[in-house]
Image (cartoon, rainbow, N blue to C red; front, side, top):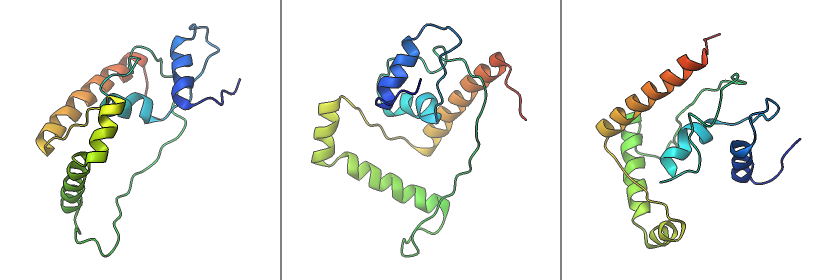
Length: 136
């Protein structure tokens, strides 16, 4: 069955489905990595409500900026993006959106982010090991 409903509704149907072996979700890192950091509360456990089966694809990531952007190094680009993000979250329209949707944005330092990423890496390493996933 192909479910053409909104992705989040489809995801919630998957989480609620009986573990019959016939229900399969093809997802991106959004459901398992990003959402728990983008939303204060999500109605599923990204580790315990899913059983990994296989990876379907791999992709790389590239950072590019327009030639007129004064930031020419990765640290400079990240610093500028952080500055812009903090400014955007303080804008009145953004504050209204956050209040309406219940979203609480948070900013952090590089050191705090590194600590957070280390804790998430350890968490997912346990999941990968428990699932018996091996590098190809």
